[in-house]
Amino acid sequence: MGGVEDDEPASKRMKLSSEELRRLSNGSTIKETVAGSSGDLMARPLQSEGGEEVVGSKGVIKKVEFVRIIAKALYSLGYIKSGAHLEEESGIPLHSSVVNVFRRQILEGNWDESVVTLHNIGLTDEKTIKSASFLILEQKFLQLLDEEKVMDALKTLRTEIAPLSVDNSRVRELSSYIVSPSYCSSVRSPKQDTLRARSRSKLLEELQKLLPPTVMIPEGRLEHLVEQALVLQRDACMFHNSLDKEMSLYSDHQCGRDQIPSQALQILQAHNDEVWFLKFSHDGKYLASSSNDQSAIIWEVLETGVSLKHKLSGHHKPLSSVSWSPNDHQLLTCGSEEVIRRWDVSSGECLHVYEKAGLGMVSCGWSPDGKWIFSGLNDKSICMWELDGKELECWKGHRTLKISDLEITGDGKHIISICRETEILLLDREAKVERFIEEDQPITSFSLSRDSRFLLVNLLNQEIHLWNIEGDPKLVSKYRGHKRTRFVIRSCFGGLDEAFIASGSEDSLVYIWHRGTGELIESLPGHSGAVNCVSWNPANPHMLASASDDRTIRIWGLNNLSRSVKQKEPPSNGIHYCNGGTRD
Image (cartoon, rainbow, N blue to C red; front, side, top):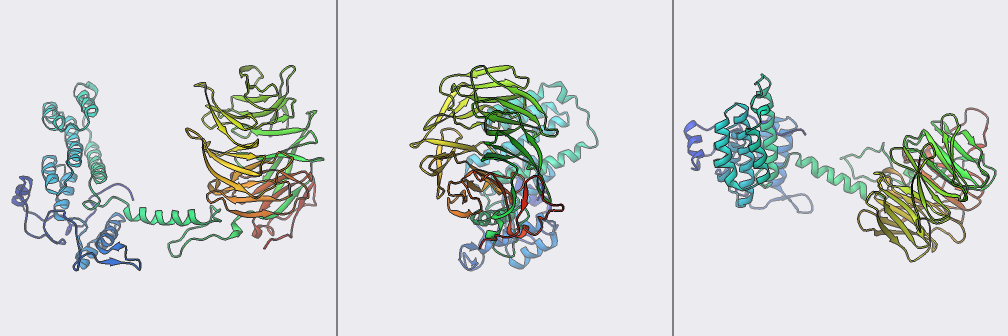
């Protein structure tokens, strides 16, 4: 839409004589009608003949408002003749005559006259009048300084702006401009008139925000209403999950179930034991998995499918988790009460081993800038390390459990860990303030949303709780349906704008809920053992991965993609491509 401009046609701008303008600026009113408008100059509510005439089947849209908003949109789009014709044919002016005078005076820089006209618009709120007057006189003050009329600027500040008592701190700031040599010594350039004209348009835009919408329709009002309607339709769409789905004004928006990844496109079989954990990289180009077989695997996500890139060996115990560096160039792998290893993703080389004498690591994570790593230890402490292995800080006490997840918020300020059986610690490491999420049931795992505002908590009683952790933690929603009796089952956020919740389950299914409504929308069969962990590709809302005790990883996609994912070479690296299994 852009800024406010003097985009109304000549016939719609005021055709007033100098005498009429003089009388208006002196506080008089003009009784004569003007071209392209009706009624007098006072901005009283505009009504069509017959009173509050409405349009639309619901009877809630007032015709006058509807026509004025359309006219405003036409002018803003540059359709000047069309806007003028709409006003003329409908007999409904976009603005009253006095508002047209006011707009013209602002754009032409007639500051004193515009202040007088402002009082004639018919505003009843004295605070609004003073605030609008302040903006206008501020512009006058700055223009006088720009023209090096310092004494006139000072007089305007003392006798016109200050008595309004609107913004004393701004008044002091304006007064500092007078004594600032750098401001007063500025040399006029040919571009200054252009800059001043732009500032007048900006001023008119600011005034529009102050004045009631019945007086001056806000810029982009029609666009705002249409966007609002589309967003409401999108939010109400249970299966909305596509960046490519173009929302149209021609019909109501509704996605189908086919937007949810429910087709097993690939089965990855390179692990030799239960697969406990997996996680896509931030850019979605890689997938890392860890297993009871004491190895981790880096998989590469290609257009043709997911392929094995590196198998990482060196741990002597099962691997409980992995963590991607912020730039996805490095990967941490954590052995169960063992060590943490840092790997180069490109080469598969182990860059460093983090260990502490007599203690074992139970979780790992990165600082958002990638300069430090964090680890939970089996003595219930959390440590922060430099990349070279130097320990920087250690938080002792009940900070973590032997089986625990570890997350660091996007701003790097908060460390999140399960500190007791039914409590999650949110530690502000800078302010040294602790907050807690308290549950009634034992906590088995959790997952942090991409924006660090929400936490997804898995409980022993087969419930998943969604918490808002901004400020005091608040329980937002609950998700039920999956099975968990013996093992650690992990869930995740996912889909477009993380609008869905996915979880593993001990009944060999992958469960998907709508995040907002809590409604279960999919339960995906295919695995032959408990599904321990799921991860949704952050760069592709149509790709979901699941890890299972059946030693496999399944890559889920859309039903209509199954034909496009074809192997170009014979199966290798433990990768199997699926063709069937389409669900109803």
